[in-house]
Amino acid sequence: MSKIKVSAMTGKLKEVSAINSSPLDNPFCIAMAKDPSNICSKCYSQKMLKGLRKNCRPSWTETGRRLSSAPITPEEIPTIKTELCRFSAHGDLINSIHSDNLFRIAEANPEKKFGFWTKRPELVNTLACPSNVVLVYSSYKINERGELPKGFHKVFTVYNQSGIDSESVDINCGAKNCNTCRLCYDKTNGVVFVNEKIK
Image (cartoon, rainbow, N blue to C red; front, side):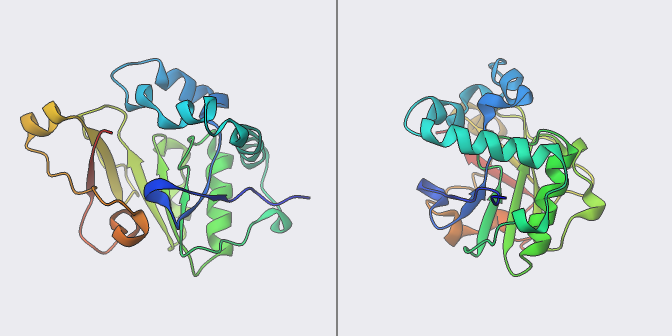
C-alpha cells in the first residue's frame, strides 16, 4: 500500500513540503471558484493544474480520495522530512474524514510543524488538533477578513490595492520564503490576522 503523496513545493513555499489535493476534483473548490468575489475565482492552483503542473493532478486527486474515504493506516502515513509542512497548499478539505487523517499525519510526525489552511472550519474537530498544528482559516472574500473560528489560531486574508487603501490594512505576509518567515506557523507570536496582497 502506497503512502500519501508529499509534495516538494516551489516559489515562496520552497523548502516547505505539502500534502495537497486537487481543486479541480473537489466540488467545494469548483463551486467557490465560480463566484468572482471569492478569492477562489483567482485560484492559482486550478491554473497550474491545467497548465504547467497538470502532471500533479492524478497524484493529488488520488491523495484527496484516499484521505477523504476512510481512516488511513499507519503504513500509509508518510514521514515528513522538512521542518515545516503545509496541509492544503493546493485544494481544500473534502470532508471531516480528510481533516481527521491530516491530524493523524501530524501526530505521527511530532517533531514537525504543520500549517493547516482551510475555508471549511466546520469540518475540523478542533478539540482533536495536535499541538504541532496551526489552524489557519482562509477568508473567502477578497478584501474581507473572516472571523476567527472557534479553536482556530489564525485568519489569512487576501487584499487588492483598493482594499488595502480603504481599510488601511497592514500587509504582514510579504515574505518571499515561508520557511524563513514562519508567521503562519507560530502560535506564540501574537499575530492572529495574516494579510497578503493579491498577486
